[in-house]
Length: 340
Image (tube, rainbow, N blue to C red):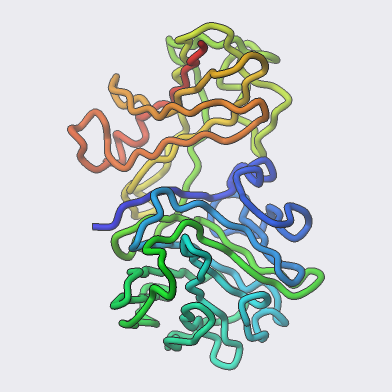
């Protein structure tokens, strides 16, 4: 069974760009109202060698990604990638080698490359100017494998050497390339994990929409704590503040209409954006409350605004069982101060 490590949707707009590691956070890597779900997606490319990347916690030796892709521009759609332009995705190994999915314009498919060598050509063709879904699963080993599904159909099923160096794990997933000017592509609903194909996943936003009986933090700018963090796009202009250890906010969240979507919840990824204004050594706990049972992750705070996440693959109130629609919609956002 596959395990999830992170999910990104960019539904909160420009502020979410601060959670992207990139070599050019400018017009080349930006949020856009072109989207698969929600209100925004991530626009990539626009010049040679531009990339955005996401950390794969734990350097898994069997990494997997699920994402929605839009080719964006006819010139890019019809340009063969070579690792530094076109429409390309990469897994970076710990010793610097790459396993790539490179776009091939003549066939409108993705091909698999290992350390700059083509090892398998894709078989599923993609139509221009529409969203399509990519699943990519790799086992890194001298006798490894690469699997790719496009819109649920197997496009690559390769067995062979996927370990060109000493590293047995992947530390980053990259969206890489572009041409020039506005010749970009878009990605949305990016999910990373390991252990097998992740499935056709989408990310849906749950926004704070009400206070509960536990709101210890002081709102700066309005009377209700949830109103400080419910903006789309997100804003640092108003916020909740704590100056004492153990203060906690528990906030209600908007629901997802799983019945209309004909989907079930797979995991919840609560996050906050926070900073430490003075002192050293403080932390923040972030997570969820499910029917009175909390699941939290503690993070050391930076002196600059950053995003802090919690991964909730299972319902903490149900003995580690998968989420159900009702319990997921009933979950509440929790964050707590840890001040030394």
